[in-house]
Length: 226
Image (cartoon, rainbow, N blue to C red):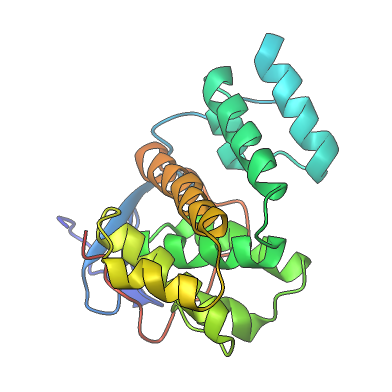
């Protein structure tokens, strides 16, 4: 990072007057946000719900009604109503599946951690707390850990799906089956990984400004081996 100002490290973030460089425990740069006039500069601008029209307005209004808010990621996706509609419908479909809301959030946390997505970690930390996940469970989930052997297996599998780009070994799938997971539930784990890969990558590309409380840095953050 080229700058005439000496960076200051704060909780895994290198800060100058212009740059936020988010790094993991090994010092690997995961993503960089540029800042101007005190605001993170997005590469894809968010749509203002007050000025939205047509399908974008319809979708944003629906999100506001359901959540009581329109998160920045949703407003940014609204640049393409097709993208936002696909995201909303994908999430709605998975919410009707076999996996519990808590386990889906835990999967979101481990995928966000593995990909180093600050926005998704912040969002799913907040959502996780709202649906009853403890702070300890949230942090453990990011590490692919749990006191429950079944939850731990799912989280480790989800992390491996990300790290291997889906090329997991037979024994990893078989391990889930021995713990009682059906093929349908395994399919849903993969689908939940997929929707979070989408949001992670979308946020990296858009440099979505985080509008949730920032998630704390892990003591030993994993490195994505993709």
